[in-house]
Amino acid sequence: MVLYIGDFDPSGLLIETVAQEEMDHKRAITFHRLAITMEQIKRFRPPSRPVNVKDSRAKEYIEKYGDRCWEVESIRPRTLYRLIEKGLRENVPKEFLEAAEARERAVRVARPITERLRKLIEREALRLLEEGVSTEEIVKRLSAKYGVRIRNKKPNKKRFDPLP
Image (cartoon, rainbow, N blue to C red; front, side, top):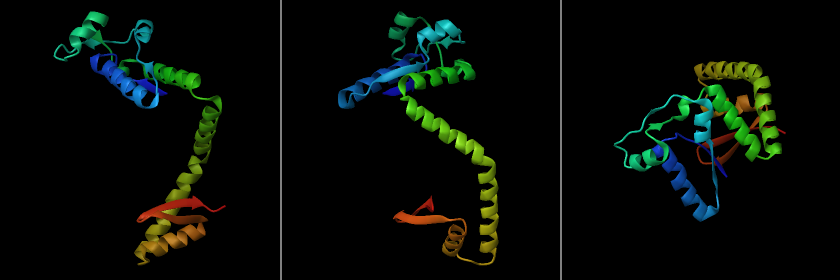
């Protein structure tokens, strides 16, 4: 399932339709529009704009919905956030949401510490660079000091993992 947020205008509706058709044929993926819907337009009464009559899809859109259209940005941010949260809660298994929320809380709790550590390590790396220590040696020293193992997965790509 793809949770979609798009403008309620000829192009925004076309994106959803085309994507649904393409994905449904190939992978049985369904689209669910979280915002902006006609029901939300009636409920929240966001500001509208005129339909671009030069758009090749305008005539059909105007016949069906009238001569006004709405952009996602026309919904207040807090309202949009609640719509997205509601859509996630209705469509994503509870255990996945709980795990994501726990990770987000952990990041928030750790942020003051991780920021101070980042700055400390960057100052240390700068000091070593100024002393003429090679990049490879700096990485080796700092990773050993802070308990980070570096594994080369692909050439020129380094991955940092905490030691067990």
